[in-house]
Amino acid sequence: MKINMSECGVCEICIESCPLGLIKKKGFKMIIQEGCENCGECQQVCPMGCIIEDEEVID
Ligand code: SF4
Ligand code: SF4
Image (cartoon, rainbow, N blue to C red; front, side):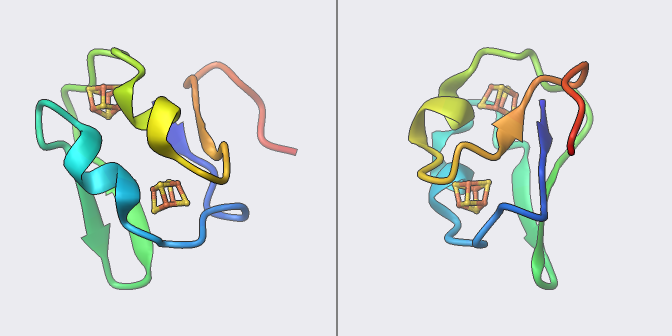
C-alpha cells in the first residue's frame, strides 16, 4: 500500500490499524515502511480513502 499525501489529513488513525506496525508519522507525513502485506486493514480505517494499492495512479 501507499499513502496519497495530497489527500491525507495526518489524522494518525491508520497507525494503530496495521497489525505489523508499519505505519509511522514522519514529520508532517505518514509513511508505510517496507514489508506491507496488503492486508487492507489500514484502508478500512482511513476516513479520507487515501491509502491505495501500489499500482493505483495518484491523480
Ligand atoms: S488514516 Fe488516512 S488520513 Fe489519517 S493519517 Fe492515515 S492515511 Fe492519513
Ligand atoms: S495493508 Fe496491512 S500490512 Fe500494509 S500498511 Fe496497511 S495495515 Fe499494514
